[in-house]
Image (cartoon, rainbow over all chains, first blue to last red; front, side, top):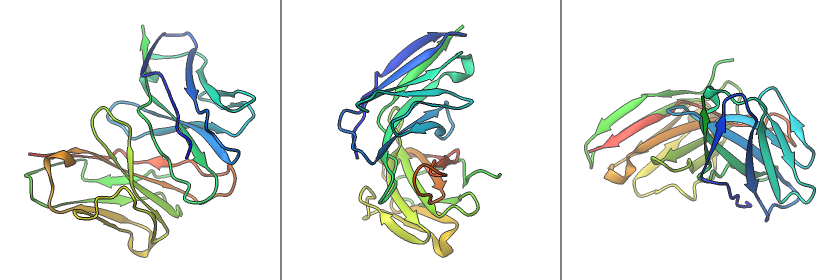
Length: 111
Length: 117
C-alpha cells in the first residue's frame, strides 16, 4: 500500500475554506485516495474518496492531481465542529481492502 | 442504520490481567477490523476479518492478543496478559465487501479506552 505524507497541523479561520494537502507519490493505478477525520474521543469518520476525478459530496471536495501523486481535501466553509485530525489514506480496491492510517493533519478551526 | 457498537467504553486493569473487548458490526457487513490507537498516533490495524476468516493479522501481537469472529458477525478481541504499553483506544470498524468504489468505506465504533496500570 502506498504511503501518504501530510502536514502535522493547520489552522483555518471559521467560515473560510480549509485546504488539506496530501502527498501520495507512490500511488499505483488500482489505489483509491480516501479521507477520514477523527473528532476528539470518537472513531474515525469517512469523508470522501476518489480514484482520479475530482469528487464532491455534502461534506467536502476532493481534488486529485492529474498524475495522482497528490490530493487536496477542501472543506468549503469550515466550522468549529470541523476541528479534528484528518487522515489521507491510499487503499487498494482488491485484496485485503485494508486501511492504513498515518499520523494525519490536526486541523484547528479558529473562531 | 445502527452503527458499530463496542463495549465497554472504558476499562482499567492492572498489568498481567486479562481483558476482552466486544464489537457488533453494522448488519450485513462482511469485513471487520480491529485497530489499536495509542495517544497521539493514528489507528494501527491489528486484525481484519472477512466473514469469520482472518485475512490479515500481521500486526497482531499473537503472544498476548487474540481475536475471533464466530459466525461472521460479532467479534471479540482479548489481551492476556496485558502490559503497560497496551494502554490505548481499541477501535472496531466494519465495511461491506463491495467491488470498485461502491460501499467500501469503513464505519468505526467509538472505541474502548483501555488503561493498564
